[in-house]
Length: 145
Length: 346
Image (cartoon, rainbow over all chains, first blue to last red):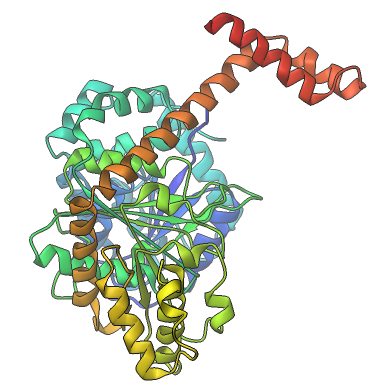
């Protein structure tokens, strides 16, 4: 029995050209043994949501430096549901320039965790491993540790 | 909605979330995946499966995107499986084919088009250009009802030719300056194409690459005999060679020049792909191809099952130790195992 590989969608959404962080993260998540799908720049919330459903990812990581996180992130979550996916089965993570005041607002709208600049990569990797395992355990699925 | 019966029902009634989850089960070798494959089998065999292969960076993903746009405008639905390499060290992968797909800034947004389904796959360390389960994923897309299924291989080297086992039509993508006529005449990936594409044809040397390809293709057909009349393959005679070739009833792989980024040559390429499918259907080559595929699949599944059987039922560990200690050699051991299996079958 092969065990499941963790699949992560790394997404850039909206009018925001700052992709260095997303690319570096994608690379480190790859080295942590995850299967990482990178969307490229300037995706719409619908595009990211459809990709999350079709690719059946365990984690959706949305990177924003534009200040539009309170508008765009809830839209992504809404569209995942609209396209037949179940956002509560996925870890929804946000990274980038997010004012600390906005973090609870995002979390109250379905975001699992927010990682701001300076977060050690290992912390993100550990968070994903632990929490995907937790979610899958609830769903009684097997997962690669 | 993660039960086998729900997923099968979902796939057959066009629910893409069910398709996506079923692919995950199959890709990860869950027992549920096997059951799904069993139940959808009779719904497969309708799609035209098109493989695209070629060296890294020649533009395979961009061509897939443009072709998808073209076939959508011809009224076809399109499923895509894009394979990228998985790391042999960590098992991780960076799957970067999807990002070449045309988005909202294009005339047709393929990302949110309900007639398009895109799935990225890691090769998970397998050589050959595809993942172990690519064939099964293609069948899931087929059962779902896509008219056309594109399979994009990892950026291939010279011998990643597994694509011909999955695809009805194999498209080999090249670009100018990938090497001289000797490179092009080498065995492997350059002899498997039903259609050849020279992408980035605005770069220097495109015509030279096309010429070498055409020469190579003509020589690889049964035309050598008629060609021996010519002492030199100079230009006018080379044209003669071509007209000879087209008279032959067999498929002569066309060479199509494209500049995928701009969409140049994409219509011609789509036409060539459709022509090839017509040819396959008319010439009974399609049945031949699919029969070969079934044979290979059956054998592959059988091998896996037999391996498992031998490992679990026989004193496998003991045999291994005996070989290590030199009391037994692997050939004799294998022979003895086969003898035992034979006595059960007959």
